[in-house]
Amino acid sequence: MSIVRQTLLAACLLLPTAVAGAAALGPELTIRLHPEQGEPIELGRVMLTPEGDGYRFQVRLDESRFEDQFLSMRPFKCLPHPAQVICHLPYPYENQRLVTPADLTDLEYDLLFLHKTPEEYGINAWNGLYFALRMTADGFEGELRETDLNVLASPPEDGDLRPIKRAELYPASDRHWPRRISIR
Image (cartoon, rainbow, N blue to C red; front, side, top):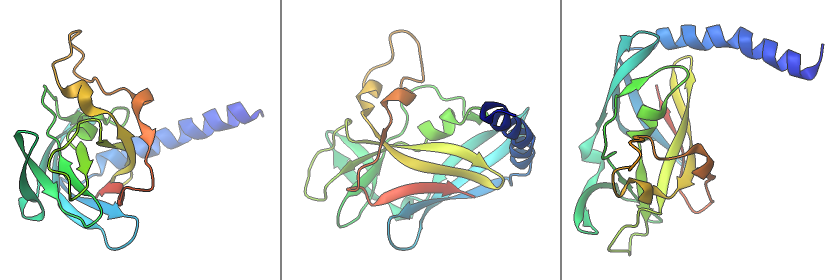
C-alpha cells in the first residue's frame, strides 16, 4: 500500500475518534496560556452547549488576571509580563460562536491578542497573536502564530466575516513568552 493510501486510511480511522472525543467534552473548560518557561496561566473558561455535530460556546475571561489599559485611544484587557504585555482583542464583527471538529475559527477569533513591550504607550494591530486551534479528545490545543490584525480595522467590504486568512498566519518568533494555549 502506498504512503498516500496509508496516510488517508489512518486519517479516516482517526476521524471518528476525534468526533467521538468532541461529543465527550464537558460543559465548562478552562483556558490556560502556556509560557515557554514556568507554570501555565489560567485565563478563564469556555462554556459549551452541544449543537448538531459541534458546540455553541461562550468565552469568559477571568478579568482579575488582566489589567485595564487605555491604548491607542481605546480600552484593552492586558496580561502584564516583564518582557511582553499581551492584550485581548475582542473580535469586532459577527461571530456565530459555533465550533465543529472541522471548523474552530469562531473560537480562534474569540482568543485574539495584540502584543507590545511594557514601555510602549500604544498598541499596533500588526502585532497580532493568533492561536491556531485543533480539537483533542478532552478539549482544544492552540499553537501561537503571528499575524497582522489590521484586517479587522474596518468591516470587510465583501461581507467575509472571517478576514484572517490561514496563509497570513506565521510561525511565532522566539520573542513571545506565550507559546501555546490549552482549553480543557
